[in-house]
Length: 184
Length: 184
Image (tube, rainbow over all chains, first blue to last red; front, side):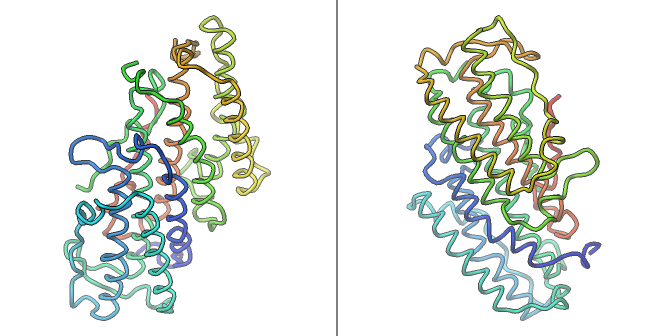
């Protein structure tokens, strides 16, 4: 926890509160080449990624924070289904998903503010089902970086659709060399 | 040019026209930890990246397209100064840079539309000073992917600021393993 003294929930919230508008500006109304294209078999397109962020709002971040506050390390978090959106999002448009994500994020950040967490709460501990003991500040920081990892993925998946179209410029476009850095 | 029959300038423009609003939503008003933090010595922060995109609007994309239309392969493009922003942007706020970028992009896309390019223009050729012969469709596609490569970089640079703060969750956050894939 090297950075504990510097971590401010307001900094994490500054990112979390901006992600719905960022995705809205990036994706709403884009032609299908950008929102339905993926990186190959069993990879995600923009539609899947927004669906995954919605699942996180519903079942991951604030529910885990609640378990942490109520049970500490005694009760591990429920495992997060990384593929829930593949069944839950299929009948919706991308625009509906963007609206759902914005509403859920707004509700979750309101619920977070209502908890009125104090500085000493940042070191409260919970138990991740695979990673072991984690702290409340780590959970808030991860929620924000999870947004950023999917903005990173979205830009990569979109760029992939033009991997041949850019011709020799491919050599200069780092995003086309990104392999996704999946978790080990 | 495997994808020539599929390339539509409207698809590239759909990305290009959205990038200013995407960066605005992502960055405007963020605390300094996010906009002034970089990845170490001689790396770029959000401020530098927006400055670089401004340089591209001023001296790279449309000027090169103009050279291509006027001179074909006979005159190589002027080399692009990837570090121009390091002197040009220093006295401005991030908010000024975001406004400048939005205005320049809007003007450039208006100039592009005014050219009224036809399908047969997409195969017109120019000469890149290092990469050799390139086509007009490759230039338009690269302009769009260049935006995406810097969205990719921005999300990575921001995530880097929380590389320790996320604790054990680091294992699951691919963006923290991205090395940037600099051009060879």
